[in-house]
Length: 171
Image (cartoon, rainbow, N blue to C red; front, side, top):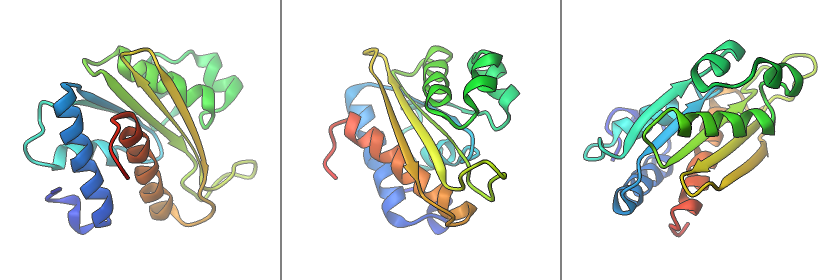
């Protein structure tokens, strides 16, 4: 079980992370994360579970638009034209994390945790999952104005759910 984050996160989140790491280990897959609004929480959760150091390859915290381009190889015009919180950017972040790691499975999270700007929807989060089998999945969630912590925890659950589905784990 996650040792340090356990006190700060709901137990179901920690338990699901451990199940995902176990399934990835059984499949001999490594994981990578590309996070914006969650600020590395998913990577921290994965590294907090003892016994799975070979499963989690790396995490990219790409909070700014420029970081998304520098760290994950996104084109400047993609972020400018689509917006940092968009399907296209989430998919490019996941593909970039997969390409720039040793992982076979990469998940990205980009969204508005809140408070959002004038034209931004607080709680809007885009996720993408890229895998070595060349599949790419997208998910869009509208969590609403539930606060920064609420959005981040909801985003962790959604990202873990995508990984759970990919690894064929029961709910």
